[in-house]
Image (cartoon, rainbow, N blue to C red; front, side, top):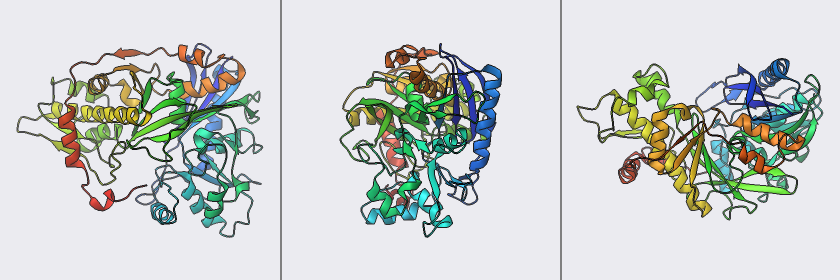
Length: 480
């Protein structure tokens, strides 16, 4: 009982078929890059994204089909508004990184409503104001999962799940449904919103695909990665190290007590919904992770490829006191400081390229330890093991540094992008490929297990962060 997964990322769309033994086959990918027409604006061609999703799905089915179900994983909070009758977008899709509504978010704060510019709420208002200022048109407001589902069902179903809806800023605190009071204040028609469905369960037939397999799993990328790495009960946490990095862990059936951001800087998330089972989690965010390695490669030119950072850093046993704070875009959990900036400290005449490369990798690892500490504080429980995926999980020097910084065992995902496995597990639970969460947990087989060695200096790290903080005080004053 194989599962087709469509995974829509920030830079491309991937499809693959996952077999009952959790092996990934028939993988196909098409690049769909966002555009930045002006600083702070991030847009994408929603039609091109949907076309690419259908194309890679058909390629995967042709190579490895048929399948018994379809799962969708996707970038969260990116927003599309389209005409219900024609399916035509009314404007560009607005990416989750888009900052055009920062001012509006601050205005709404003054009225007692807290939105972050990366959430969907103010993005939807911006698109609606441009296309339908009188709110007289029959439009659909959706996130990427609902947009892809719309095309898979040939315009028959407009639905989303709570893992995606929770990132819109428009869901009630208990995740039971849309907050109509907030919708009314923002002038977002309730009729335009997607139907809330389970993260795992039969949704609709994908009539746009050969054989019309049933779509039966949907989740935002981080929750899909959480499930894909077998973190389906309180205990282990996963961190996905991509351009940025996100830690997620399962808390349980009770929502964390804080309404928005916790005291240690993490956020409540819906991990999944399955029938009457609604499971909550916590998420910690690092604004800049792999971006720092790209800086070494593209801007400093001291490595030819991202992978080469491992070989270069291995050229020295330690940084000899050099510390790097990876705050190229600010910090994130636990210290939400948008005005912090990257800092390279402790440089001497003897500092060479290997020391800088190792300092960058260790700096990202130290931030990973910050996420773990924050999640433990906000969850009120310990994290015995850290599981990792994403591009940086392929870097042995970095993974060892993460184990050393956290002083925890680090388990490396068998696939670089665990979102595909997670979406497959969610869909497979609905059609019987896997019987329950115990089967999902048992399917976890790490590629490598890295034991902690000598701990990194956390006290020196804390001093370095203080020096990087509030570099631009006017940005540091912003808080969402």
